[in-house]
Length: 362
Image (cartoon, rainbow, N blue to C red):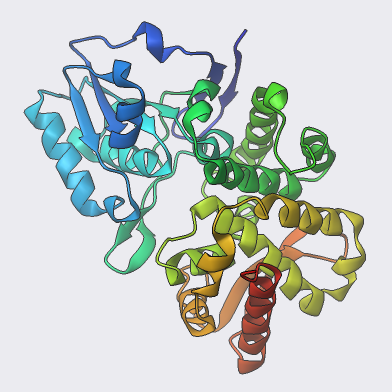
């Protein structure tokens, strides 16, 4: 039995449904539907092939304006018009490309999204925004353009790597921790001693995180207020990703970024370190991230100077202040504005070095 709910947005509302093996039965209307798919996903699920298919190899360098231009060109070559509908099947990079492309092809066509990564299922699939890299700048271009429908099929999780499962769970726990109420404790109740969500609870955990994120989106659709709290761990995490040349996956980097944020908060908001939920999160992340293959080596190869440089260039900072999201004295997240001083940068580097020490190569 599928679960469905609606996300309300100013541009349009859209449906989210958790389904089971829907794509295996086929859903393509030959005259209108065009399919954008991750090359790796197509190799794993050959039944996704169709006559109107655009396949792209997915890597960080694929998330570019050049790739968007290629997809636009292919849509036109294949005969797409203003009445056409794009079906996107893949992870977050496919989603970013599909969002951006759908919004500009002939000034906008409708689209449907099937996330194939756990990170996409629990987090990035809702919100309707794209982020495209331009040159050396990560996520510097983008827009808001939600799909008609998001269909989540947990069957795709069966072919994910272990670290990709962990990557998705880092984002899931972040969303639940960012909310007030019982969301965080309800999430933890579905995890085992390794920090993994029990398979029998996976659909329930996805539903919990998406309904939690729904509240943030509907209150703050365009990222100007409370929704910014969902950037928790991202500013530090993006710096880890970029400084490590993306050897660490996004969700894992966010998990590490949350741990750095907790370390920083002990200096900026000392009272937070005595809050039970804050310590619960740190303990959970320690257990979960310990299961990431090769993490100690990948972290050891990131220099503190490279980390600091990437952190300083994050687009969320202002000219005079760094913007960090950390727990306050109540244990809940808030945006903290810190002057761009040598003192804070020294604290930041020390926190990063502390994190590396937790995952030293044995």
